[in-house]
Length: 254
Image 1 (cartoon, rainbow, N blue to C red):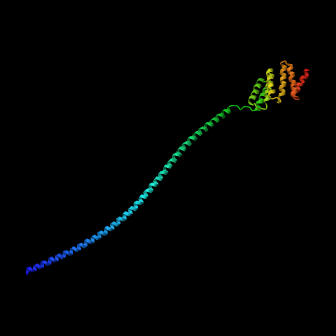
Image 2: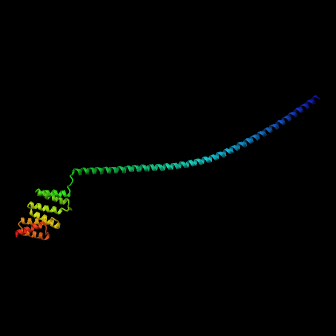
């Protein structure tokens, strides 16, 4: 009996222990399932977060690439502008240098011109001003009046060279002939007065020149030539003072 009771007690204990083991295993499975569910949920949440992060990073990466491209384009544009500005600066620098060289050359030419003008002005100041036409004629005539016949001839010849278009050239030539007459160089005097008649036959001095020729011919002893000259004078220039003198001379000779 005791043995039977012991066996029953042992069987009960074994059965209870088995039931307890089975109960503990179910709980463990439930816990494992719960943990797996939590892990799955966490994994899903993690995946979703990672997906969002990846999407965000991709968007940010696209924006970043776009921003980098824009920055590259802006940098290229700025480099182009800088190169253009550098070229402009180089061009302006060359132009400035060329302008400086040109300005310096012009200033040198201007300085040289001013110096030349100053030199000419000094030379002009040191050289006496040439006499005017009327003053030159009067000066030569005054030499004749003073009896300086050689000086008068030289002065009238200078007058003819300096003022060839003057209205007094026939008078100057006449006084040259008259000065030679005063020097008793009758042949030269005749040649000088014949020049008056040849070049200026209508000059007021032409009758006087012809009368002076007649006087020279008379001094040379050629009375016939002198008479013929006075007759020409009466015919060509009647009524002039020289013609009246020729008439008186011819009348006295008769």
